[in-house]
Image 1 (cartoon, rainbow, N blue to C red):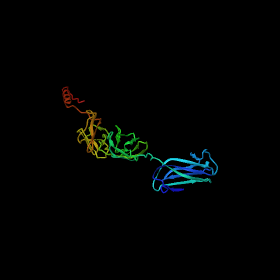
Image 2: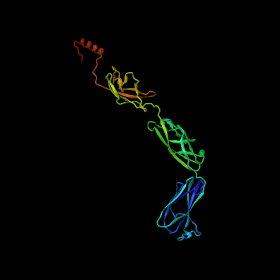
Image 3: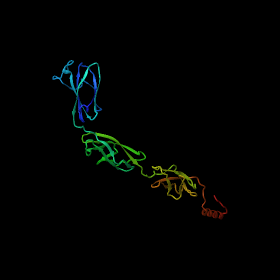
Image 4: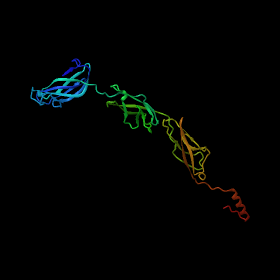
Amino acid sequence: MTTDLTTGGVASGWYTVAIDVFDETDGSASFNLTVGGVAVASGASFDDAGVFLNPDASRGDAAQSGNLKRLSFETPVFVDAGAIAQITGQSDGELLRIDRLLLTRVAAPNAAPGSVALDTDTVAENADGATIGALSAADPDGDDAAIVFTTGDARFEIVDGSLKLREGVTLDHETEPTVSVAVTATDAGGASTTVSLSVTVTDVNEAPSAPTLDAATVAENAPGAIIGAVAATDPEGEALAYSVDDDRFEVVGGQLKLKDGVSLDHETDETVTVTLTAADAEFETSAAIAIAVTDVNEAPTLDRGTLAETVTLAAAGGAIDLS
């Protein structure tokens, strides 16, 4: 059964719905009721809770008033131009008759907020506790000012209607260039809407990582020796320039080496500490690196003054002994 309600004289507005059902055969047929596109009842039957329309509220036989019952539904529906009421059913061989469709005018139900928005949706990386932007929402019932915003994301909080990072929390562009934040808007009547807001994490130039050296030993007496490869990482992928603070060393082609003609002496310095620096166009990072100078077997040396004295004394005795 289908009925155009407004053609039947029903004014536009909100209504609750009830129907009077007459069951002639005491069967178990069910029915569905849709009003204005809203499913009011699905799989309803005469045995559902309702009010018998005979005085003693008992079930009668066929054609008796005890078989007439009013079923009421709580779901409010909005009726406007062209709104259709439609009743469909599943029959088990019984005759289930719809005697009357009743509409009761009610106040408009509280509607959940809509159009939840963030006026600024970017935040710089590494910005501790940064405020991102002001939240807004539209209340269909006209009370926008009473809307309360909340979020379940532990990294964020909402203060005075603005979405911000909690103190001590930062975001990283390289790890997460875009962050989705679930925000709930709740009106004074308790109706709520949850949306996912997208926040863009903007990139800022960051200092390179501390430089490292893949080998930290060099043999003594090795002029111009290559010690090891220097490495560091730039978060933005910029090319890095390397330098060393000790004039005996240089970085060539990404390798730390002694300058040509320069060597180290284990007996003088068993360990040499240098400071390596990695720099991008704006920032630099330094690290102290200890280099072990390894010992090598060296030929003995003679002290000329001692040798001359020994020769002179030996000659006076009539023999020369250089041992």
